Length: 196
Image (cartoon, rainbow, N blue to C red; front, side):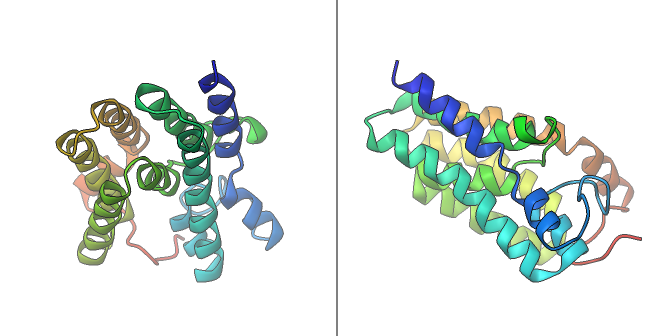
């Protein structure tokens, strides 16, 4: 029974879309209407620069970390802990506070992974950084790191969390379907490039 209120708390935390809040504070408008249309750190980088992107990235990651650490500290583990992480992730994608129109969940998902099993989270983060540095495509970096994370969770002895990671990977692929088409066409915007 303890897991149910924690899942709700995680979803509500995930629903605090940092990109939308930061954009409003800085007078950048609604990132869901400008740039790529995604209220994530990559779009905030395009719209508002490094400071806006950094704050968005950190806040979105923290809201994935805190609910999972809270649940773990209260003795929740296994499938219930996976559900808490997924709730934070889905809250970012479908935020109740912003008309259920959220981002793609990359920073929040990485935060969840770090809290689930920090070595796997660091691996996923390192994979993202490496892919982003080589290809300059945030979407490709995200897809790769999220695809590898469930395998790493399974290999390190976390089958329930691996199942949660697999769900996140599938949802990430779905949310990035437009990006995948643009990558195939060679039209996906590079990191740091302002959209016109």
